[in-house]
Amino acid sequence: MATEEDVRRVCLSLPGVIERLSWGQPAWFARTLMARMWEDGVVTVKSDERDSLAGSDPDTFFWTPHHDRSPNLVLVRLDRVDDDELDELLRESYRLASGRRHAS
Image (cartoon, rainbow, N blue to C red; front, side, top):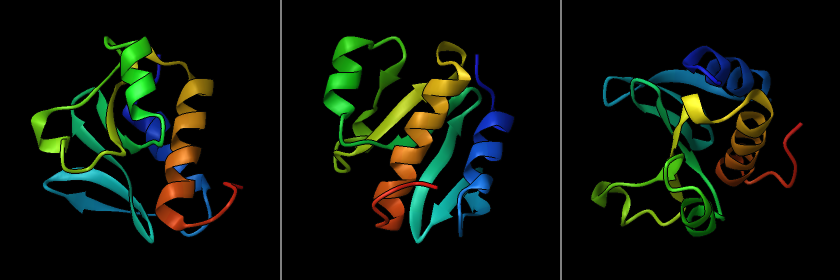
């Protein structure tokens, strides 16, 4: 089970990532937004696999009508992912946000 502190740890371990508030919630930026706490226990990340993630596990991955205009944003329930899956999700989000080919 992942936590907001796990999100923070992974994000800040990546080159050039900064943390600041966005809409009153902790958010992490790598050139552009890569992750933001949506609400307690739910983080927003970027993913090219949004539809397949939500289709395979809608209890973990979902989005709201607010996210319809951003087709690569997906919400993740942190209590339903482990550290390895969170790391993978955040590194993909970093790659998309930073424009880098690989997350270090």
